[in-house]
Figure (spheres, helix red, strand yellow):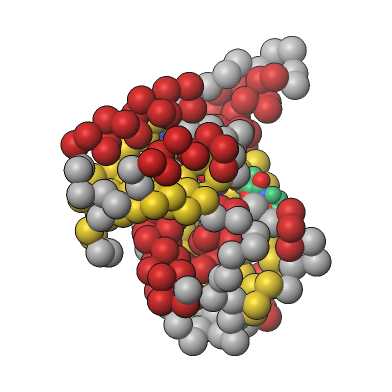
Length: 244
Ligand SMILES: Nc1ncnc2c1ncn2[C@@H]1O[C@H](COP(=O)(O)OP(=O)(O)OP(=O)(O)O)[C@@H](O)[C@H]1O
Ligand SMILES: CC(C)(CO)[C@@H](O)C(=O)NCCC(=O)O
Ligand SMILES: [K+]
């Protein structure tokens, strides 16, 4: 069994895998990550491997302690990935984006793919049919948009994510919801339509904490898979074992 851990910007997510199947999932905060992982390992005694991808404040050293009872692999830029990285600054490319690109290649071979991760940030990553990773875009995620509007103004309240009633916000809160939600929806649909100008066919994968909320509101029909990053960790782990 494999325990895959995704250290995000806000939260840590984990899943226990038996081959490609998720047996159980977890979400926890950084402050008690060690205790949480200990508990998972207690419950799933057959976990023999731990794989970690981090864009957050935890690094390799934070996971060394688990090396006594598990084989720990902390994914780094030095690993081999199943794509050709054409990013001009490959060393600064976020590990979550690299894992998503790897998952797209391994799960959707021989096609153009656009991965959209709607988490703390919304990231766009494009890997073409020849497995060239080209790059994409980074923009603020939904929660970040609400917080930015509140934190950088004197009068805007901090609101919880909610569906706007209309494109035309008729109150402060409706204006904020329309700006954040309709703004993000138009952004995502806009990006997809721009990519369509350059590539006639591509597979779109939408993931992240806001994937389901966004998927049903987009004009483009796309399938949301909130677990795509965790599943990609499992696929990348198997790729590594095959290629080692
Ligand atoms: N309990 C929660 N805490 C934070 N965000 C949440 C929560 N529940 C839902 N969300 C939504 O998920 C989004 C954050 O996505 P996600 O959980 O994937 O981010 P993350 O943990 O920081 O990971 P990453 O850094 O990989 O994006 C927020 O915009 C928010 O709307
Ligand atoms: C963009 C985020 C914050 C999204 O989690 C992460 O992928 C990251 O820190 N990236 C580094 C910059 C880059 O990907 O070019
Ligand atoms: K993200």
